Image 1 (cartoon, rainbow, N blue to C red):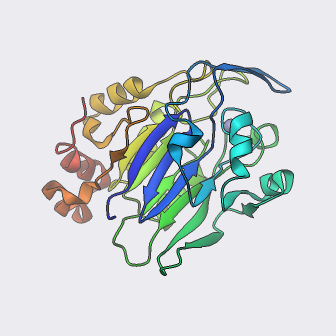
Image 2: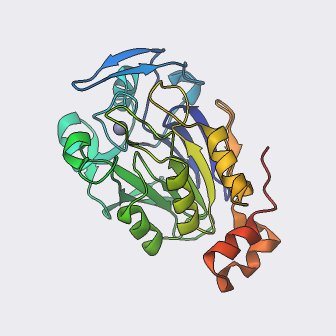
Length: 286
Ligand SMILES: [Zn+2]
């Protein structure tokens, strides 16, 4: 139970098994096809690696935002009705109605099991593109998962955001063992990116020096401009490629925290950049 297990279903959709709870991020289960949004047409290019039936029962959906088809598609919308709890933005919860519970950045909710186990879900701020995009892109949140007994380290799910002061503030307030990073350098509104590009991912990795970085939201859509390979090349070039853990779609992958490695015992006493170099070696994923 101590090691989170992640299964990439496609795009931003990930099954996260965390401290005995099963959580699903941004549900998307449609077949490939086109989505006409008011400003842009989005094209999905790959099928989900798992069907809704394959996923099985879950405890909650963590929906970073409801207004974009690549984060919540038609089948994903239906799936929300089957989830016992759905956490999303405050504005999204109003639009969705039903079970959706809105969280403002830094607000928390608790998930409990009948046997008394619980996890805390805290909403994190997110900005879905460059400064000024807020009114065009709408509200987005990320999520921080934590448990009181610290048996399992915190997991940060960025949601659709770029690197900006809000993400830096998450790093000032929380430590994370795992960062599920919504990357792909999505471009659909102009010559600027709406989700993390390689530079943003590197800034985030620097801000969370103890975390394994697990990129998602990198494949399956025509407007995603960078994939896992691009991130691997960028991280390798800077000497900390081993901090990335790329997921194979449909494969449940345990993500062991970096601090299990010997090198990381020196982490606390080092400047961030050299600490990253110190933890860079034990995890090489070619
Ligand atoms: Zn979006």
